[in-house]
Length: 213
Image (tube, rainbow, N blue to C red):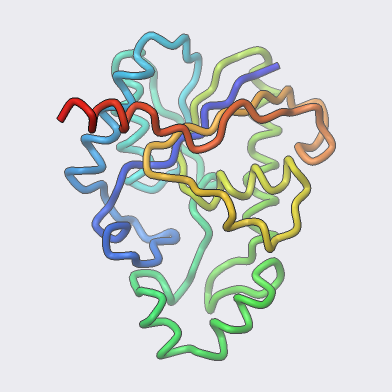
């Protein structure tokens, strides 16, 4: 059974401004870099065998900061990118609903099958992330694998694992540089497997750091 450490990237300016980032290449903010360093310190003595990242800069930089004390090379994958929000990326919810009210309502009513303009569906996100996890688990049995990614892919993996209706997708709080840990061997699709969840949205490292400040 492989253990997966699913890490959401550090904070960006767009996170702070509540803008839809999607697959736009937004870098970490200074706060995000500090969050990644705090998580790196927490994980420096963990026996991590491989580190993957979404191929977007905010995830790559988070992964590189974590990888440094382990002397590991980060392997990038497009499969672990955030959900594509198309032309809505860079905008706030209010800006989107004012400019594309009908498109937003259609997407909100059925995001599993409806795409944001030039974006992708939740079904597509769930398929690519769960397929990627299965392939990695098969290729690296009994390893500890960290993946620096985004809130959407982590929610997608949890939703597939638990076979949840899409309405529960946004019920998972996934904070910047949080840890979500699952054990999974890749012998069956995630939804039909013996995988189990160890923890979700663990931000203990940030809380400890804040208490020291």
